[in-house]
Each structure stands twice: as C-alpha cells, then as structure tokens.
Length: 577
Ligand SMILES: Nc1ncnc2c1ncn2[C@@H]1O[C@H](COP(=O)(O)OP(=O)(O)OP(=O)(O)O)[C@@H](O)[C@H]1O
Ligand SMILES: [Mg+2]
Image 1 (cartoon, rainbow, N blue to C red):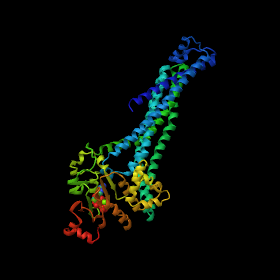
Image 2: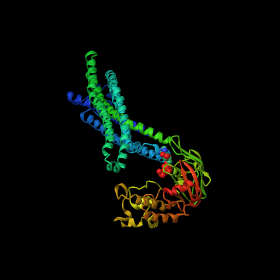
Image 3: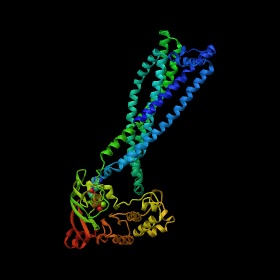
Image 4: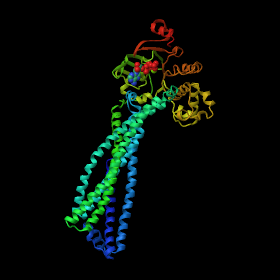
C-alpha cells in the first residue's frame, strides 16, 4: 500500500485536530452560561490561543463568535472526514482487487503436478471466502490505524491542556491494557482454528455436491453428513470462542477505564489541589480518546479475528509462487515436424509412473495408446500436452527442448478431449466457441464443428437450440453428449494436435461409429493422439503404442503388432481392446 496508508494517516490527523478545536469551543460556551457574555480563555489551559486568535483579528468573544467558530471547525472536519471516507473506500477496492488479481495470475502459473495434489477445499475457500475475510481484515486494520491516530490526537490535546492529569490517566490506561493482552492472543489462536476448519468444510462440501448422486443412490448421505457435521461443529466451536472473548473485551473495557479516570480525578483534586476547569477540558478529550480507543480495540480485535485469513492468504500466495511453472521464451507458432520423447521419467511422490519413455511422433501422424488401466497412458499424454515436464529425460517439440519454449504458445495448438468431458455452465454456442462473437464467420465454423462431432441433430431438437444453457444451471447431458460437445469445441479451434483420452468410451456404438467416421476423416489433418480401449478406434492408427506398468512395451502398426507381438494378440483375444 506504501504511500496510500500515509495519505490516510494525514487525513486522519486533520480530522482529529479539527474535531479537537471544535470541541474546545464547548468550554467558553459553558463559561458564558455562568458569567454571561464574555469568556476568557483561561479554562482552556494551553488551548487559549484559539480564543486569543479571535480577539486578535478583532472579533469580540461573544456567543455568536464562539458558535460560529465551532461551526467552522466541525464543518471543516466534516468535509475532510468525507474525503477520508472516500479515500478508505478507494483503498479497500484497490486492496481486494489487487489481491484477487494477484492470486488469480499466480494460480494460472502453477505446475499441473502441484495442482493435482493440492487440496481443492483450500483453494476454493481461499479464493472466495478467505479473500473476502482478508479484505475485511484490511478494512479493520485501516480503521485501527485511524482510530489510533484519533487517540493520539485527543490524548495530545488532553496533555496540552493539563499535563499532570493526562499523565496519570495514561499510566492507568496502559496498566489496564495488560489485561487485554492474553485475550488478544487467544482471539488470534481461535481465528486460525476457524480458518483451518473452514478449509476442511469447503473441501467436504465440494465432494458432497460432486458425489451426491452416488451417496444418495447408496444411502450414504447420512454417513457422509456425519463428516460434514463434525466440521460444522468444529467451526461453530471456534466462532463461539471468538464471540466469548469479544464479549469479555467489550464489556470490561468501560468500567475499568472509568475506575481509572475516577481515581485520577480524586487524587488530583483531593491530594494535589488542582482546579477542576482544565481537568474537565482534559477529561473531555480523554472521553473522546476513550471512544476512539474503544473503536480501536474493536477494530483491532476484529482484525485479529480475521487475521487468520490474512496469514492463510499470504501462505497460500507464497506456496503457489514457489510452485510456479518454468516457462521458456521460444514461441511455437505451430507444430512443424515432430515431437520426441527421450528417456523420459515421471515420478509422483517418488514412485516412477513413467519409465524410460522413448517415442517419436511425426507431424500429422495418428498415434494410439493402449494398455491396462493404470499403465500410464493418461500420464504420458499429459506430457505430450505440455501439462507436465519430464522429471528426467527430454521432451522435444520440433527439435526444441520443451523447457525452452513458451508452453502456452504450444498449448494453444492443442485440442484435448479428456476422460471427463469439460462442460461450462453456459450456452452450447459459448461452450463450443468459448465466448466468440456470434458473427457469420464464427457461426458457420461453429455449425461445422457440431456437424463433425455428430451432435448437430441433438442440438437442433432442443427447444432453445444453440442457446440452450448446459451444465449446472441448465440441461444436463448424457455422458456421450457431453463428449460430443467437447469434441465439437476442439474441432472449432484452430489446432495442430488433437488429443483424445477415451474420448469415445461413453458413446453407444451407433454414435461412436458416426464420430469415428469423422475422426477418421480428421486423420492426416491433425497430429492425433488417442487413448482407447476399443479395437475399432485404433485399428486405423499409424502407430500403436502398447504400454504396461509405465513403460512402452512395443510400438507398431496394427498389422505389425498383431503379427509379432504376443501381448497385443492376447489383449485382442481377451477383448481388452
Ligand atoms: N496425482 C497422482 N499421484 C500419484 N499417482 C498418480 C497420480 N496420477 C496418476 N497416478 C498413478 O499413475 C499411474 C498411471 O495413471 P494413468 O492415469 O496415466 O493411467 P491410465 O493408463 O490412463 O489408466 P486408465 O486407463 O485407467 O485411464 C497409476 O498407477 C496412477 O495411480
Ligand atoms: Mg487414463
């Protein structure tokens, strides 16, 4: 925030000083009630210069003049307070905007490998709820600062008017503050608990929603709800602890301070024979300081309550910054010659998932990956898609090491149809074109993509046609329909490499045939990687890569493999393909 906080502080000082001047005017007013007409400044202690100033510019110290002066100070204070409030709102907007954007762009750059093992509940909670809480923390922090300024200004006035009285009250106040130290500490602890429990809860809610069908169908909702309830109870326990502490804080403060003030007044008037006039003005300022102090303590306490979120956000930000993907500089316009993997290894948690992979894929080849479940097909394809770098060995794109190229530019040339189709909660048109302008050119390309993906007639039969909303808020598609929409999206894009991971597995054989036909038609137009379990899908591939336990067993065409490779023959015989 740098200089911005400084501006805020200056504005705060102005507000406090003007308020103090305005308040001081009450004293001459009180005097006039007693002695009528003229007041002198003696009861204002050192602040008497305000009235002397009036006399100096030739105004007599009558009621009207004092009232006008008072109005002047408070009006001026109001104006500055207004600007200070606006400035605070600007700061808050700036703060949360910056925080959100920073988090988003850091998150965009994290390693896929890190994403896979990260806690979704934490991510979701941090990026939505926690960021709000952090913004509130900031607000309370700023408020604390402002209130602290007010306290300083008022206490300053109090000292200025009657230093001995002020000194004694301050000592009493500081002593009483030690009482609060432990409460503050406990509040901070409870706040951290609260954040931790909220992460857990968010994660559980996500799983509850995404697995709802399964849980309902198998009467497991109650079992899972028990898990949720545990979290709910834990969250509420921390919240209650925070509430108890703040109740204690708020109720004890005033009585304690009044005891302090009363004692000091007694000591001053009885033992030190001080006169009551300046004490009263000083007290007036102290009273003002006291209400600022209360606001300060409230804000500070609230800040502490929320500071768990701020800490969490900082940790999260640091963590994702540490997990940033390395990105090279060389921009890939398109795939010109080939992809090559040399002695590639990939490990997850020290377990090698891919071992010594050597593979060469020439542009516009169609390559099929087959092998038992868990053999590493998806993992290998993820490397080809640039999602993961190799832990050992090298990946070359047109002869350039993957780590030297700007991976995003390469990925722009990739269409990826994953095992679980991606559907956004939006219209069919937007799902396929990814929010392109609906002009003639885009619309006709869109139509073409629908046709190629064999989803044309289904879309036209919907009452709202291409404007039908899919996903959470709209029509729910069958597994096969979802896949066809995803295929249409990739065909709409201008890509060089098309990756299909079990892309046709959820389709009935009729539809599959239709898509297969269009995929066959794509053969030779794109470089195609297919992960497939069905024989029909891979029969026409230029190259079939047979995988087992993270290693490539054999590479060859269908004819070659069936001829010479025993494992492949067995797979076909067992209909594992
Ligand atoms: N994030 C991960 N952490 C640890 N191990 C993982 C992770 N992702 C995948 N694996 C492991 O990597 C191996 C290969 O998984 P992969 O998804 O590549 O298999 P697959 O051949 O695509 O299987 P399927 O045909 O079932 O889709 C599996 O043994 C899996 O347990
Ligand atoms: Mg897979």
